[in-house]
Image (cartoon, rainbow, N blue to C red; front, side, top):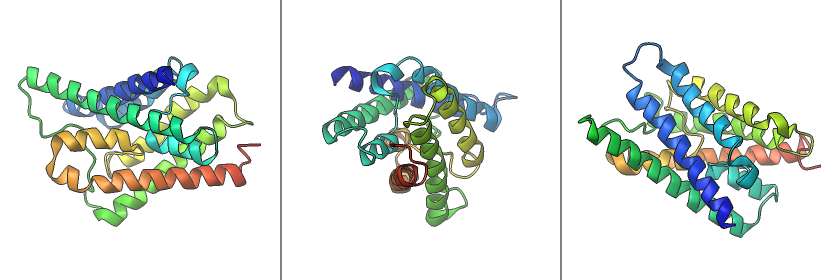
Length: 221
């Protein structure tokens, strides 16, 4: 169990650091843009899927782990270990980004935190619910009994790119409570007050995806 937790810690650290750092540091570089940021998140998942995936399954996302728990692919104790490791990995990822920004004498106003933008709470909730539903539905399908494990990492990684392409201009894209928690805690203020949406909506989206996967796509048979 400890090895799985360490793997999830490393995976979430990589996802949060490389994804949010690309969003923060690459914002002013020509050619990065939305696609570049989306690819940073997606490629982080691909890299981790083919490294830590054989140990922990590479959830690196509490919403994914909860979906797996709902479909009885993991027990309650495993779920707790995974979520704690994911939160700690995300915190270290953001702490590392903060250290880099401090060393470069750059502002800490932007840490890749999510926000409502012009959507408000209800619009942001809907966006995050739908994006997470799609993302986790793909995960439970491709890793299910009828899925193709050989290509699972690529499929999941590029699905994360897909949801980021729509989500970045709207909310910055969470679909992952651990990815949202760390930047919000360090940034404080508005990011912290809006954090609940980026925790609750992905979890609910993941639960619905798990149920649809099980009873409509027959992922568990």
